[in-house]
Amino acid sequence: MRSFTIFSIMFLGIVSSMGLFGYAFAQNMNMSDQNMGSMAMSQMTYDVMSDNQNYTVSVTSNGKLPASVHFNQDVKIISFDAVGLASTDLIHYEVRIPTNLMNENFTVMLGNSQVKSVSEANDTFTTLHINIPSSFVKSNNIGDSSTLIIMGTEAIPEFPIGVTMAMLTAMVLTIIFIKTKTRLRL
Image 1: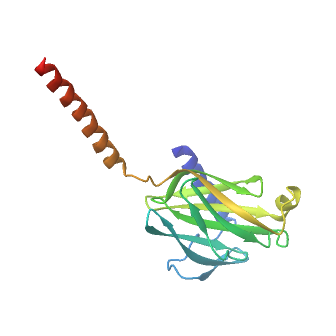
Image 2 (image 1 turned 180 degrees about the vertical axis):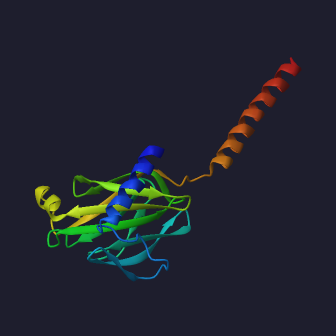
Image 3 (image 1 turned 90 degrees about the vertical axis):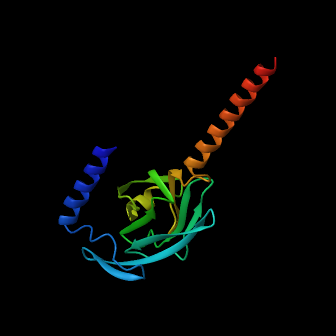
């Protein structure tokens, strides 16, 4: 996994030096414009809820930004509508996801087709770089508008692991205590 991450960073560095990718995200969390080579990039942030906590997911794109982003904790999915897919030669999305919302490996789907993505992660965010060429859209019979789905292998747990371990330990100690107390009475 570590070698894949190092390879991804090296790949992005090489591609970035060729002018195909620009800086991933602006420093402020408001809507902003960036430059991805010759493509203008816009960014917008979206608030999603999970376990009564608010998380910020940001999307940067050279295409139309989604009206909203949805998160489903039960199935570990972030989704949004991708628009203008067939009418643009290449749509590029950079999706920045807090690691305490969803982390690990990601699979990106558009329609019923898997889309290649490159991810880079640190302690606080994972950024997915997703390129959707119009040739991919046409060859997979995807319309000009479709739902982009990001599936994770791990979403934040409903109960923190420490609470789960404490409850398990308390149950085991209770069982041991009851068993020893019952033996002493006999």
